Image (cartoon, rainbow, N blue to C red):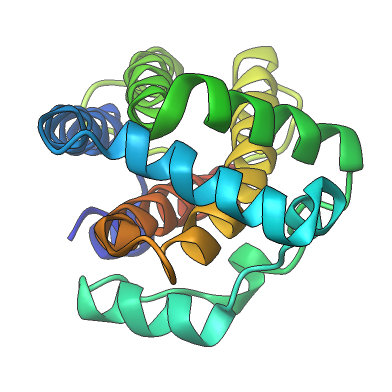
Length: 195
């Protein structure tokens, strides 16, 4: 598993591109199953029944998340998810992106980010070297860290509503797992590289 391999030896550009390939595959499958419509329907139902502010405040069920990620072979470190998103504006933007671009948009966006991260990792280290924890003195590493932190904040604001909607829209259950796995990949890379 990419997460566990990266934790053990550091993340490489190849690892980031492998995550991107998995996300592109999930996006194709999402299109085939029309999960965008299911996601919009589920999130809209949540907003109608609870109100937008309550949906923006949804927190992740960490026990369920850990169990599902473990099922996929991903060993989660609790510190990865310690911060969450407290910023209401980021939650608002995340929910708007989810309801306008659907789950396929979220997956494709994350895939594109991981491709860029892979190129950045390749540029920041000698060939065959691993990306390891560093300080923010290197401008390239600093920009990578800020980008990953921004992506974590946005995805954190999307995973709660999607996973909550999965409770009533069964088609979204696997999508919930895919978003959790994406969040875990971002967090693992962030903690390895930036902390």
